[in-house]
Length: 258
Image 1 (cartoon, rainbow, N blue to C red):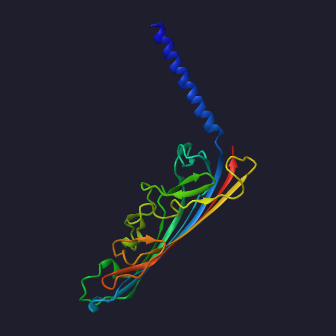
Image 2 (cartoon, rainbow, N blue to C red):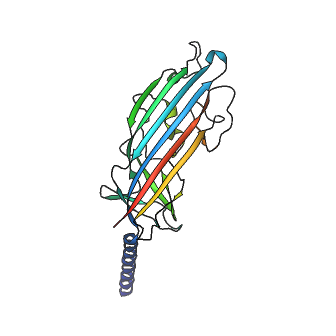
């Protein structure tokens, strides 16, 4: 029994020491107040040139703006490959993985060339022009990620930004999350920080900017699917052909904190 008690005490002491080490490491981890702002714009054209009774063309635009309402305290992950690459964000008194953002989305759709009444191949949603503005959902946000001196943004798949079925202009092609899992938004595009390093406490302010551009591939996209690539070729010669472009830009400012 004495031996068991001694072993048990040893295990407890080791656990306490490990916990103290973890707490000490977390305490020493670089902390910052982060401010994030971004924009995203999608411009697309849906067109059918044949067969002639269903000649049709529609044009959609979607613009989004988003930012932190105030600076959010974050803990930077370690520089090496071990462990998580994600920052932790202090949100309403708890450490979370997502930095909350607010903003709005504006969408507009116009029928450039209406199909003839006898055409049945054009879905109803593309036959009427519409527009509307929607606020981002209350849970919208991004995960900030680090690899050495570079950072990136990531939108978790369980973090919706926009109402899936808005009251106005409910067109599936405006819902990017259905077709591109992480909603673009600079996803996994790592860019270096300027102003110093995370561990150098003399570097008071670090900054990074992310800019991406994708084309909507007309060879693979359709009225129900949107395929984004860095370069695109010509589209199909029949059926509904979707083409266009997506641009996103972010700025991230990290001010050192205690």
